[in-house]
Amino acid sequence: MKTLFQKTLPVFLIVIFFFLTASVYSKFGNPLPFSINSTVTNKTDIFTVTGEGTISIQPDIAYVNAGISQSASTVKQAQTKINEVINKITSGLKSLGIDSKDIKTTNYSINPTYDWSSNTQRITGYSASTQLNIKITDIDKVNDVIDSTTANGANQIGNITFDTEDRQVAEEEARQQAIAEASKKAETAAKAAGFRLGKIVGYSENSFDSNVIRPESYAKMAVSLDGANAGGGTEIQTGSEEVKITVVLNYQIN
Image (cartoon, rainbow, N blue to C red; front, top):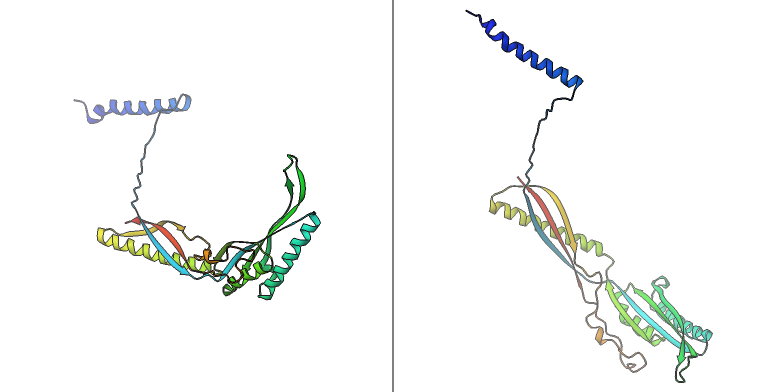
């Protein structure tokens, strides 16, 4: 009768032979293919909520564009005439308390005028024009500034806009309102749906203010600047503006 050692010896020798063969083959031949595949799956549920904040602001600064156009028979004469008007306008503005640094030339051009009546190009004179951008830091003087510029020779008024120096303060208040509203919505929804909010993993925002306040009663202003409205003054209403910010918060769901 064979002993247990005698029975297991052949199996043991086969195992030893296999590992020796694998060792020699991996050393001198191509290695035996051997790999371990590991798959990790991360699943994160995200809850998205929006909030909106709105702040109403009153303007405290204004911008007015005053245009001047003059014609003359020579370039020099056109320049002289337009410079005289600019000096009169500037002097009138300074008497109203407008600082010289708040009066800026935004356009200046001189172009020839032509006569085509004889089917030939003939220069008959020159037209000079310029635009002044006026910043008004005392909002109550808007109407006075317009009346002064037209009285002193401006024959074009346009691009009247209003703004506020503290816009960033208003935007921050609107942002805090929006975040508070979004957070409240998220907490209410989590309580109602039975889940727990995790940390905020995403944030974005959009601003919907127009950056300028345009007067609603612009049509009340003198349309004719050639003296036809000499009996009345300018009536511009500053109005107000809403600074609106919408935020989007992305929460992890625990």
